[in-house]
Length: 279
Ligand SMILES: [Zn+2]
Image 1 (tube, rainbow, N blue to C red):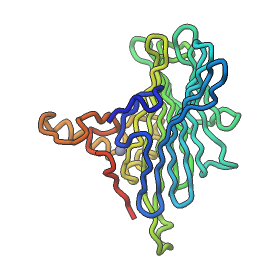
Image 2: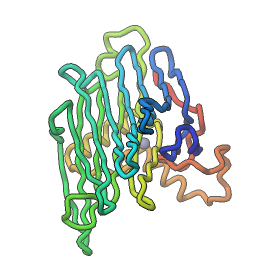
Image 3: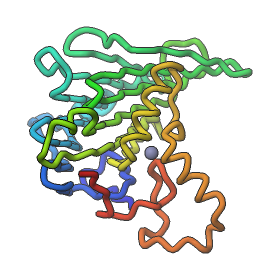
């Protein structure tokens, strides 16, 4: 479903709408909020969309913000990840995107105040000289981990991009720790994808998710991304299966009550609130 008018700075597509608060089993929640803040006399303000995963006291916050300066020609989009598993001292990962005077996008990536030490970076050049740069950052432990992806589509070797995709995957799994536990634990895997482009000189921001995936499928994908440096949503076997199912099923026989508006990683198999909890 699509709800464009919550704050208004992004298009949202996903199984849940803003605002939402979802409880998954006994120990996990997802909170989705939007707000506008820091309104100054000169008309500057900041728009926020926030997704928070909390699992057994461990927390991961995703923040998408747009700074709109009084000078309408200057604004910035930032995607920030604050994950309690990132040590030391919960250092945040942030991806800043600004518009250049030539109508392209300039990206700056930081872990706290230093550049992110990406796990893998890749550059592909197509026959027409267009380039796609992909950077992936894997972090955490076997039971509680994350993947951040920054993908920039460039016209040529020029440093700026015409489109930027940022993806974050969150995994909390029982793993081996479950052997020694008698209490419930919760296995969850979710993704958020942010696509930024420019349309008529303005930012065009699309936010997809959070969308649920099977944990084992995401862990498999993390391994593949780690070894290849390549990322695409269909590398999640569960998403690839959904895509295959969709292509086998004639469009006019699908009966999903979300009006077919789902444009997440799947084809509409997830309906709002229909989330699985693995205890
Ligand atoms: Zn998936």
